[in-house]
Length: 549
Image (cartoon, rainbow, N blue to C red):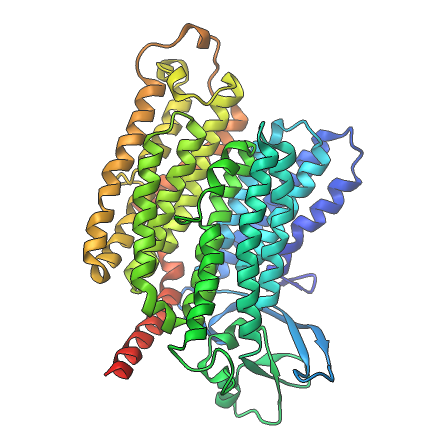
């Protein structure tokens, strides 16, 4: 699918860059023009994502072959003939999506639009703020559509720069500390990812034809192609193909020490971004100090990049290591669930409570992924989407009350239900969705994750189920403190949500309710791709058992 000769994925990814150019050309005193330009760019991006969604073939499966990818865009990007021992350096501009990534593309476009609407009250350095916000949008979207590891890593790193400045310049009193902590944590994970990527590059090969485009060795054999040049490759699909690994290379074979080391390096890099226990300590500081729109993006999209990296890279490239360490991944997920819930219960700062609840809810994603079966992984990916919409609502809700009261102290409120009925209604939907109430989207994804995990890790899943009670406890405690009781006299002048705030929150609430009643539209998108991923993991586990015998 193309517009003006350019593929739709390129449009969706780089349209915000066009927005950056437009915003930078606008005179600095025309702040409203900058806001409306950013809103228009992200609205068009969401519209293109919906077109993409409508044309997506739900029946196509195959996450490790180009035939299983849709809307593929491929071109030779960097092609250098070297006289050194490693020969030709070939890197491609390679984009494509499957059932796992299409949901993340839609989520990124939706949350980015909501974040722009939420940014309407930003008055400090408006031009720089929206330029950074749009650059962040491109970095996030690029991660979800890249099929070349070098390109994936480039987008992953691009995201660091705008997030650092958005927290460090437009954040709260301790913004510099939070921004540096976020940057250092993420950069450490990126270094480990870079080392694993280099090891993969010098272990895998692909075949390149006269057109300069690569094809995996298995696909070439199926097509009967001959006479193609073999090169080392960053092609992620080739890295998922066992036939692409050079005999004697560092990561060749299965169940080898270096493959386990590479898997652990990637896991740490992605786990920091999720974040899971014990790599989580940057998250509460970043959330508390970040302005509300950036907290929305951080929780709604950025945390999903870590889990997506595991599904797109770690699992299909290292299925042997995944099956070996699945129980450790499940354990990390359960610890994150319980730890996040317990610490959230101890918070009196509204924003910090929501931040720790995110750690707990992302633990559900990790547990579901560790199950290695269709139900669990489906629940994990659906939880990623649902957590993005629900947590975006929660941080927007914190921003609404903070803009009016300039405090996030939960003990300072009470009796707001009669004073702010619209706010109470939206907040109730978000909180009950977060605690997994049947009829709302959070219940479906958590149920699938636990159903899948119970088949693989029965004891751990039973322990994890305790989190449901803990989550209900702190969520209901917040609702009680904020809405029930007597309204303090100092809040007599508080006003209910205005039209802009309703536009931000009501569509998200509708999505949460709709997917709680009828989740099939999202589940059908990912079903074929997740079945294929589960088959890869099952085959690896079976092969490992046969080898052990």
